[in-house]
Length: 391
Ligand SMILES: Cc1cc2nc3c(=O)[nH]c(=O)nc-3n(C[C@H](O)[C@H](O)[C@H](O)COP(=O)(O)OP(=O)(O)OC[C@H]3O[C@@H](n4cnc5c(N)ncnc54)[C@H](O)[C@@H]3O)c2cc1C
Image (cartoon, rainbow, N blue to C red; front, side, top):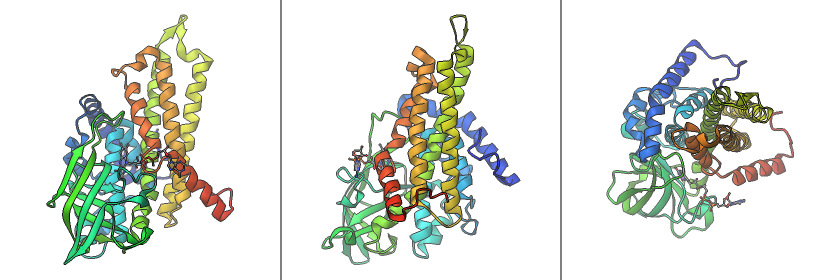
């Protein structure tokens, strides 16, 4: 079951690409993901192969040597990756998010120089917004940049940074001293290999244990002036603008998890017998499976609509928030039901639903918690006064 609605037409090339992704993900990424979950090792050992498969420049336009995928196709690809490996899906999604921000905001020649080689693992990237004391309220960032000859000097620390150990580039929100509020916020593209950048892993995560999550420390790090992305005072807007697409990525990660849960529950309900019949004949379990299937279909349509808005150059933050909110909460319900249907067997790591239930958990937290998505949706309604933004 692809993310693509039955009524949507894909070109032959797009269908072939999607099929290749599905095959690679299920045959190669799934076993690697299971291993990385067990030993908490980085899924990015597959980074060279992810580059070869074209996963690192999916959204870069063809004019810049990328694959030029529509956002709908991009979401469908992430869904297939997430079915097999939610950890890989978030790693790829964050790199795409950073690339999209550079595409919209970086100045030439940096923009062309970097994006024409964005598919090369040597340019792998991270999105460094969050700090220990600035989570949902990202504007509270304290990482400080002072203007020096030829650029900036950076001091501070970012937290919970996906891809933060392997990445070459860190798109980082910083604060310039002497300015009030958002006027001092600025987005800088920091070279992770520059002197003074140090990353350390955050261990002991509940789920997506194959994805890298890091604390990134900056001590007197020099950033050249042409690595400022967008204007001063526009830093928060620049960073948050990427989350429109980023949230679609997390929503697609969530539907990948839902589909994996559905397949596991249906297979088990057919095979497991109690009271001398397959447990799938019990209506209580049928209800769980049916509810999951309906939520899966609904989540896919919300994603498709939000992605289509971006493809039509009409990005709608509320549409992305709705897709992320619904898909991520549905993924958690799906994972709960999948464990429930498996009974005790679902409670041990040998069974994939145990891992899926842990992997699903973070989807309602990162790239804006569910509570923040609801704030975005409610504020949009308050501003537009229109109850259906689908109209
Ligand atoms: C595995 C992982 C990977 C991550 N990757 C990245 C990354 O690559 N880059 C990055 O920058 N960040 C990343 N994050 C950070 C993530 O985006 C933040 O955790 C998230 O934005 C929430 O911030 P917080 O954890 O500080 O929670 P807080 O903001 O402290 O929120 C705590 C609780 O208060 C609620 N809350 C806060 N404000 C409001 C409000 N106004 N209304 C209602 N409720 C509210 C929240 O919903 C939550 O329930 C990652 C996090 C994790 C766990």
